[in-house]
Length: 147
Image (cartoon, rainbow, N blue to C red; front, side, top):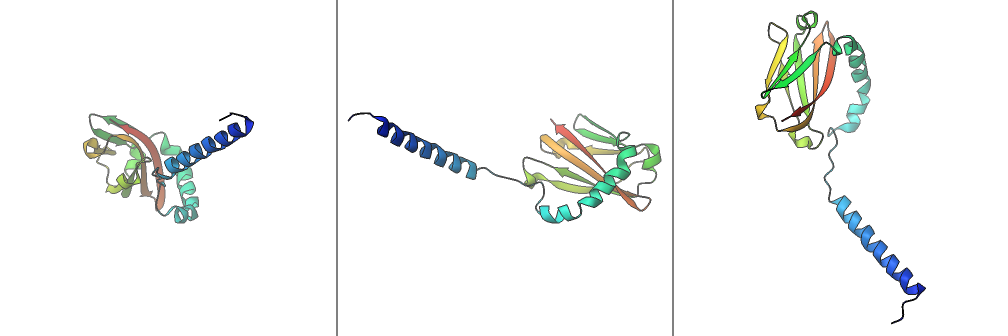
């Protein structure tokens, strides 16, 4: 068999097709998680989240998050802590949405929220806190690496 330019073109096309189909198979087998299941409904209320962020801008830097020895500590300034009546905390796992969870919280008398992080799977998390203060909603989002 003689190797000429026609044979080279055919071999190139075959190699290209094999690589293309291999990449298609590889990409189609990857798991893709959206941040939330009802993504499109959440975009409709996105303006509310923007308003919450604007209201929270002043106190955002005053809220401290510390993670030590399987304890997460959220410390609120006194002026804010005394006015919070109810709050929710959401844990989002960007790499696996099946591990997302939320719960309610109440601050102690010092304006501190302590969470036991030993039961939370290790890795990168986004933590979003929402609460009501003066009949308006506020929210803060932080990222944390749990080891």
